[in-house]
Amino acid sequence: MKRSSKSHLPYATLTDQGIVRDHNEDSMAITAFDPASELVPESLLCVLCDGVGGHLGGETASRLAVEQIIAEIEATDGSSPMVQLSNAIQSANELVWKNAQVSAELRGMATTATCAWIFGKRLFIANVGDSRIYLIRKGRIHQISVDHTWLQEALEAGYITKADFKGHPNAHVIKRYVGSEAAPDVDSRLMFGERPERNLQGMTLEAGDQLFMCSDGVSDLVQENEIVTLLINPNLDTALEALKLLVYQRGASDNLSMIAVNIPSGKSPAAVKTKILRLAFFAIILLIAAFAGIYLGWMALFSPR
Image (cartoon, rainbow, N blue to C red):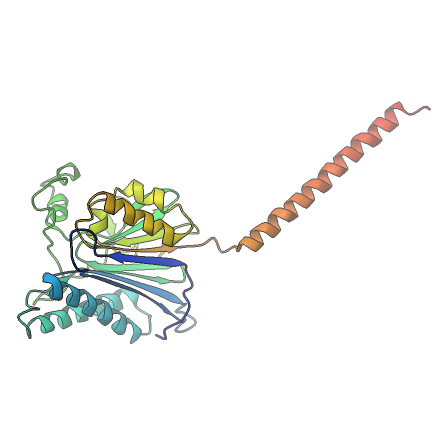
């Protein structure tokens, strides 16, 4: 894949260490690629990683994972997105694990890894950990990634309900992560509806859709309906700053990272303006014709014979 200097979709990113932490263990990157062939259109790869393992360890783990995932994807032809995403995350896992063994400062470091790869308007996702991907469509928000936490596994097994999540002592226990000795199971499910399904991968994004990715420093403190409300702002940078402010108002106890991508309507403001002017012109013509018809009818009715 050849990198492109220009993205085919508008996006914004924001990362911040928060109030409590004195360093930022999150890493993220967005990379645009040119079309690889007639069958592989231009694409946008979004990667967000939330590191753990202390100051140096967490930062190193997330940075290595982001860099390795992008490098692995760049070396592909983009023809098998799910296989290539999974392989890239597995490669990042091996790299993080090996680096953790060579230094006492880095031992035990790990990270989440959440990826969204958009080909034209077709979406593919893969993740390990609890950093999230949301899809906002027609004013409704859907978490389309699956958390790999103790709570999520207990929910899927039927031991608890979502009502039990708040304040649960195991709320931040992650069951999968990048940096483990054994290769993690990369989740290839996409949740859009009642159950997460693999066959939804490659779903077509619609005009007006928004993709939102974030670390748990955001999702723990901001409600889903608040994300929808603030992302209504067409200026994505301003919208993310507003979300950051909300997180800060609630303590910002963790690092926070966000990526937002808009799926535009495909019509430029100039095109929309031209269409409106054209419709207005035809409306005026119709009004003139209507008044002319009324006038002629009136003249025919009341003119002397």
